[in-house]
Amino acid sequence: MIHAREDYNRIQDPAGKIGEDEPVFLLRAKDQFAPQVIREWAALVKQSGDIELANHVYIWAERMIIWQLNNGCKVPDSPEVGKGK
Image 1 (cartoon, one colour):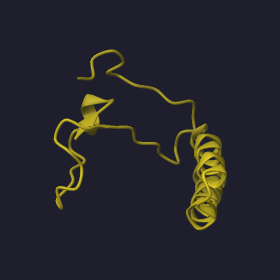
Image 2 (cartoon, one colour):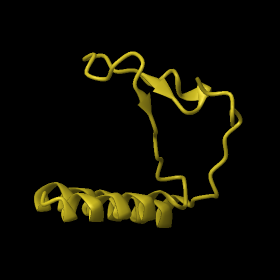
Image 3 (cartoon, rainbow, N blue to C red):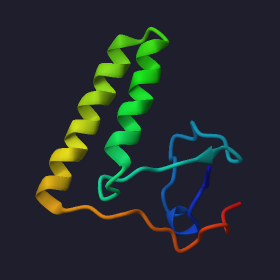
Image 4 (cartoon, rainbow, N blue to C red):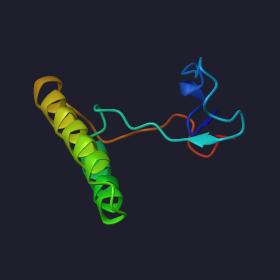
């Protein structure tokens, strides 16, 4: 698994379901834009016909919004911009 940020390399896939060379992008609730991006992704999933998955993802985005309201959020940053593999 290859992360966009080197400091996220500590996030692992113990079950080995993600290919060693597969790029992965992680969105955190701390990122103020994450819920909007996730809702957009859910809309694409819905258009493809998977209503159940889309609804699950919409709920996940709402959980992020609630988390942001309780904990705050910020514009994303990356100390490793341009240095990912």
